[in-house]
Image (cartoon, rainbow, N blue to C red; front, top):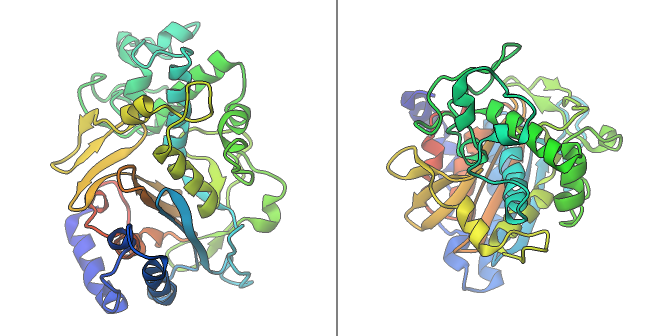
Length: 364
């Protein structure tokens, strides 16, 4: 998105956020709960105004403090016309927030010796994905760091190389689909089954799924276009590692907490060494932005954060967290306008200036 568009947005949004307190949870990490509750009180007052001014019907929010779920709150409605309220159980389409969750599972497989992050993925397949010899250079590490050289999507065409593998950052959902096929071959399970067994159920993410569940008919939100017209959430029948996760903010926060709490090799949690692999820069995006394994990485005036955004057109999402600071946030919105207010919420909730919001692919 051109920079001028962000400036216009900020200019038009100033009146809506001028009264936001400069207090943030980051400032109160070591202080009293009552001080932190001042922040949540401000959020409860300000978020509905931001939503109204930006035509966002519903939002679900979760905040982590001291490595634990501190606060989660839902705002607005699931459907613009029937006015059913968003609750903490409401299911949103998390879109690309699926990618780092899948990346975590791949790192866990690597810990157990089931996949080599630096081996050609052709090692695990019966035949190469495409005939181009450069496919031999595509590894799990390059998929998770978006350095495969693949386009984001190839549509109905066979995937191709825009760049030589390992030479340039190029956000690619196609790479994740390729790695998903390898994971399913190694495990002998559909991805949904594998993630439910190894991550979602052990972490008590009981309402989360990469495929449509019958109970979602009653608890899923509708998405909304920029004018507020509702559109039904799509109903994936098979898991898509690049973006089919359906979840709520409190459950996705459990993933962020897992990123802050290392486990043993024989547990469902990554060891500290593997967590550090995920959070080690693999390719530079800008002065303050890099990409790790599954996560975007940013250097802020308050410390280092990992982050990701999601965009399924009428559903938008954003998450950022810091392992060092043991703080984080999850924002799920049911509107094409959803990302317009995320930067203000993040600044209010966890503090700092976050260069992730300047990433060019984010569509406000």
